[in-house]
Amino acid sequence: MATHWTLGCDAADPQGIAAFWASALGYVSEPGYDDPDGASIVDPNGLGPAIGFLRVPEGKTAKNKMHIDIRVAGEPPWDMAEREQLIRVKVAELVTAGATAVREESYGEQLGHIVMLDPEGNEFCVA
Image 1 (cartoon, one colour):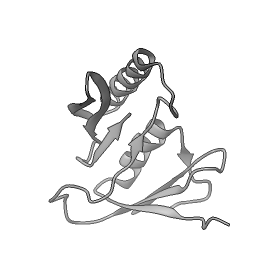
Image 2 (cartoon, one colour; image 1 turned 180 degrees about the vertical axis):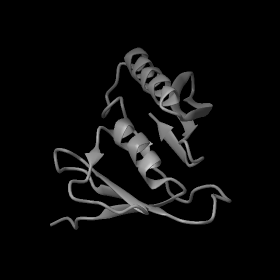
Image 3 (cartoon, rainbow, N blue to C red; image 1 turned 60 degrees about the vertical axis):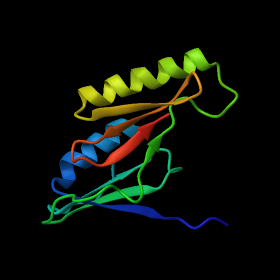
Image 4 (cartoon, rainbow, N blue to C red; image 1 turned 180 degrees about the horizontal axis):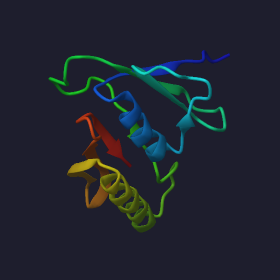
């Protein structure tokens, strides 16, 4: 049996970054979680892990050692043109929500993923 787990994240603005990630992942605020120095989001279907955000005084100083990857294209096999379109649509949505696109990574001639920064500067990828 799998162990249930929560991803814990540091944040300057827990509610703001939680709102960004809830939108990015299709999550919702955790019912009953009420902490002015924290926020928690959950998968509304109960399948994915909860993600908690706690206020910390220090800012981000180095590259993340762990990050979230958003897989909009699902599992292989893929129609590569459709996969690229799904990635680009999601990236545009995330930029509108406050993220920054950093660079594109390719696998040969095909788009592999796009590296992004969330509104607090944390790296993540859209694939």
